Length: 315
Ligand code: UDP
Image (cartoon, rainbow, N blue to C red; front, side):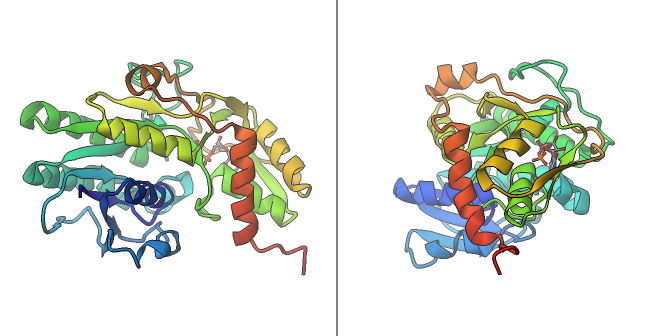
């Protein structure tokens, strides 16, 4: 049985990855310091022999007994309000945490895949974003702590590949959504759904003309699985190229939930104006493309939010 360490296991993506690798017959070791993760996301795994859990901060030395075949490094705050609240931890997990896990991978002779992000492209001047674009990042802006940690993560991962011959994989993840997103993580999808369900104002930042392209979590997990098992070590974009403005997205949520109303608020500093992945590389190397359209994926996610957001209207 192959053994895989998944950091950030109690988070949104980490928990879905635990499920997938258990389903594929792996022995899964989950690790999380629970700063932004939630044990409820992995509670159902604790009665399985195939699952172990370590409550640990990977910014500190990481020890895992026994052999390891693979490491997935998904520990990090990932939403703008989180990395504004805990900027130093965000920098540390992307830099020191990645360094510790690369060292562990080297010691165990394991293959490591690190979670990078579309944020390495910053507020992009190239659209849609291809992997060979170097980005437009403000290092000292509010997003700098996340963006630069992830850029450092890519640099050190490539250095371990080049200088130590380590088996490394780098995925650049674009906006992803689905069940288990934290209701209060501040990102647009949980924000709009919780506001609409409670018949509150949907808080559009700016005039809502900025765009994002939303990928359903199952599609992302499939892309990660394929990339890990591939023999490609350069960064690969995984995301859904179906681009929409934030205002149009708010209107879709209003229509689906049948409650709430739009309100406009100042745009946060350095908020990227457009974002959409070019996924030609993933198509070619991994034979991957997203299968779940926004209408279907958003409906599945709405079902989840209906269960976890208190409906203040229905007393
Ligand atoms: N956004 C918004 N209202 C909210 C939360 C976010 O209009 O309540 C906007 C945000 O300014 C950005 C987009 O939605 O332009 C996506 O934001 P999110 O925090 O989900 O992720 P980002 O892609 O910016 O990292």
